[in-house]
Figure (cartoon, rainbow, N blue to C red):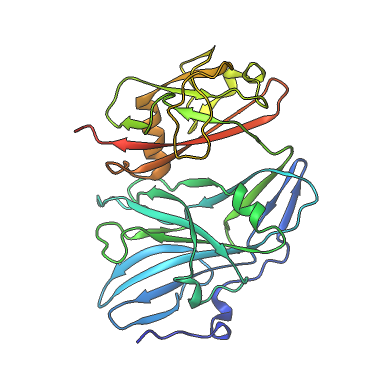
Length: 331
């Protein structure tokens, strides 16, 4: 039987922030209302607050019993009067290092509707995945950033929680995980930038091809196109500003290479008479960026969403996305 402790029993789990918004010239920094960790000992069915104050922990350990800890940070999101251009969650790793070689750890970050009180109910609360990322006790501590613009827009005026846990649960080996600050010391934070929201542009990876396959061991180039439409004039786009998963294109040309789809996962439509911004990317650099973002190599046949950013010549931000299927080098 799993034992659950009431919220009142974990008042010391985390501290409440006195001020949750720190203003800057073009944005604000939000800090959590509450942080903490919940631990689970599966062999005896015990689920309770971790005896770690408000530290956000994503760890596992085994002495007499196996123990998993999941970390939480819950924010009260203001209802902003000014449009939000970007919101980035920042996690600062806080742990020691080890000279004994151990495998790295992979963590999953997700978000959920929060009640601003970390409790055992949060341990398995339904959540929406954001990303996975890698930590390594044999390397210096890291700072990890995640785009949470969409989540922030969904939860304006409400409570928004983030959970971090090890992906190896319930069978872990090697490294023991990591910690990511607490409310009183280096807390997680959301950096909010105000401004005109990014304008969505239709993106087509490997135009006129469906599905979009990317071979992980390829040393070639990946063709990508921002598709022109009646509402998107590709001549207005600054090619030097374009980044796909943070990678700049090798070259850019104005050509008619494809047409937007109609809602299907990908489109094999050919030219439609409108100029597109045709881009070529170094596949190896894209794969390196994908591995860095995931914290691991993609699995064979794994579907991956690749995000593009950039701006128009007048400074208006643009954004687009498309899905690729990863293929191992063995194919």
